[in-house]
Length: 222
Image 1 (cartoon, helix red, strand yellow):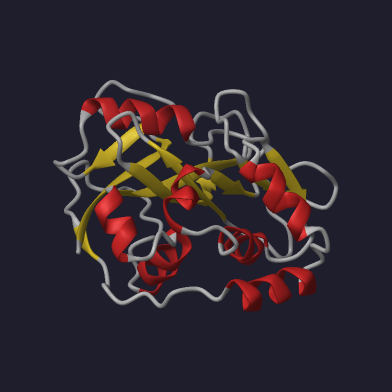
Image 2 (spheres, rainbow, N blue to C red):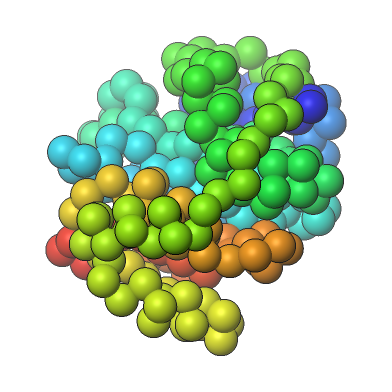
């Protein structure tokens, strides 16, 4: 299956400076690019630690499609403000693509990561090509993922699940692998409900990025 892609980061390009969508494939509309820019993290929003060097996020776009994104640190921030560039590479998925993967965005993430699609490019082309993903994704076993969640320190998985079912916004602290823990939590939900669960790992909380599920550092900040 072929999907569109886009990159949001801090580059000076064609009269634009600072954080913006610097590259996208032709199928990504202006409206989707604007929506992606709203949800994507900028300077200081990513917190890395020994167990988490990247963030993964999943959220809806204005078109009805979804963004599945990997955020990492880049080189030194060119603007001179200090720190490192934050680099987000997103795949744009439609509901049918997600259904073929049994509504498992993190299964698609691991597939794309293995294929090399999320590699950071210092100076990406402004016009990206769509990329082809695999089509075989096994259904997750909730019981196996529940056990893995407990190994990662989440002993109140049922409480987290109920809060999400009730429509609440949930933050879960985790000192270990937060991407795997997010996968464990998402595995507890059947069918299309998983698509309503926007989530992010290792990002600072923000009012403009209303993720339903945030996986935070053990100290309480993403």
